Length: 290
Picture 1 (cartoon, helix red, strand yellow):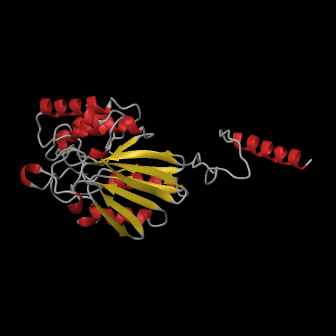
Picture 2 (cartoon, one colour; picture 1 turned 180 degrees about the vertical axis):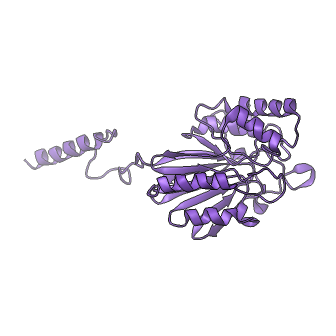
Picture 3 (cartoon, helix red, strand yellow; picture 1 turned 90 degrees about the horizontal axis):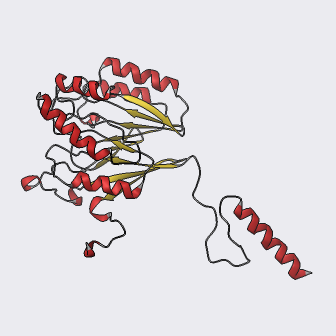
């Protein structure tokens, strides 16, 4: 009778474990820690690429695309400087966009464009962006997380102080008012505007003051993390852009210059951010045998 009772308990646990897509036989002693799988449907993973240009090093962004294909995030975000720009030659600009598009179009998952100073250097490039891709700023909501894709080049000023125009500011004011209770808000823009604010970033921060949010930027080609207003602000390093060393070489991890993909896991406590070094991501074929 005692043996039969034990078998009944084992059978019940076995069936219950199978309810969450996991089928495994549990006994009194088991060779695992627990069976609380980390598979909350509200959690998700996405990737972010950093600056590709401003001294592009050929082959690096291509490597990032290969790595993203292996990693398979749900989607890929960017923080601008996708092409070299700094011209009003339409043929050159379109060649650069066609080259970039040919790379990101290899991805199975969506890629979200965000403009940088190299992408919309002048009014001519702004018009080309609008002709080819439409909006320069936008938002979306995924699994109760609000994504804000901000244009820090409004209007375009190349290397001068960044700005968010009043029309854009009003747009995001309405968006934030429409989604007051999302579990988190994530911002993506090119320049870390709080480093030399013209006043518009202070306005944006005021709009964000009553919510949880995290900011991702690029532009400075050097990885930085700051805590500002109790929130995390990141300036990403590079995904192919030029370094500060001799002949554009990177100065290394110690100085915040490296090629990376940012891997973000959204959790109930907010985004968990991990830096994946490009030179540490390989497929299943040993590099030594290639």
